[in-house]
Length: 254
View 1 (cartoon, rainbow, N blue to C red):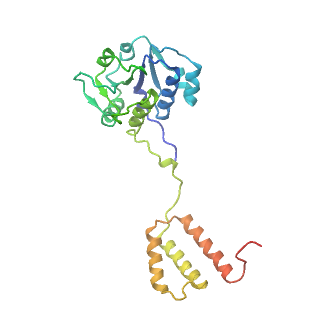
View 2 (cartoon, rainbow, N blue to C red):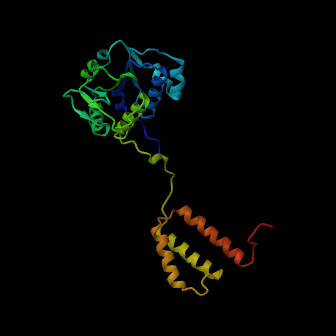
View 3 (tube, rainbow, N blue to C red):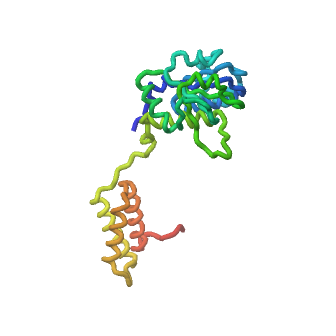
C-alpha cells in the first residue's frame, strides 16, 4: 500500500507560541508539529530566536523553524484567523466556551478543510497566557489531567493538541501493515489433513481418539484466521517431521 499524503488543509492551522522563554521549547514544539503534519509556526516576541539549541531539539524539523513567522504581538499573529484557541490550565472568569482537545478538534479540522485559518495559542512556559491574550481568542481549551499534578511542558501540550488534530484527518496506519493474504478454507483443510497424517506417522494417536482430536484441531485453525504464508510454514514443518519420523533424516545436528 502506498504511503498516504498529509492533507493540504493542515496548512490552514497554525501554532502560535506567545513570548516563549526557552529556545529549546521552540525546537521541541516544531518537532511535535511536524510529526503531526503541521508546519506553520508563529512566534510572538520570542526571547531567543533563531537559536542553535532550538535547531538541535527540532531534530528533523528545522525547516519548520526556518519558515517560522516572528511577530511583535498576538494580534498580529491572529489577524487573518477565524478561530483561535487559547490553551490554558487555569480557571478563567470568562464566558468564552471551554472544552477539551478531543471535543474541540473536530470543529477545527472542519473549518480548516473549508479554508478558514485556525490558530492554537500557547502561552509563556512560566506564566501561560495573560488575560489580555486569552481575550483575543474565541475558544478556551484545557488538556485534562491529574488535578493534583498538572505539569505539561510547552512541547508536550503542543504534541497533545496536534495529535488530536491529526487523528481527525483520516490518515491511518494501514500502509505500515505487512501485505499478506488470508488462507482459504481449502488451504486450511489441506494443512489439517497434512497435520492428521503427521500425527499418525509419529504415533501421536496412540491411546488418543484421533477423530475427536482432529475436530478440535480443525476448529482451532479455522477460527485462527491463518495467513497463506503461515500455512506454508507449518506444512513445511510437517514435511520435516515426517522425514525424520521415516528415518530419512536425523532429528538433531550431527
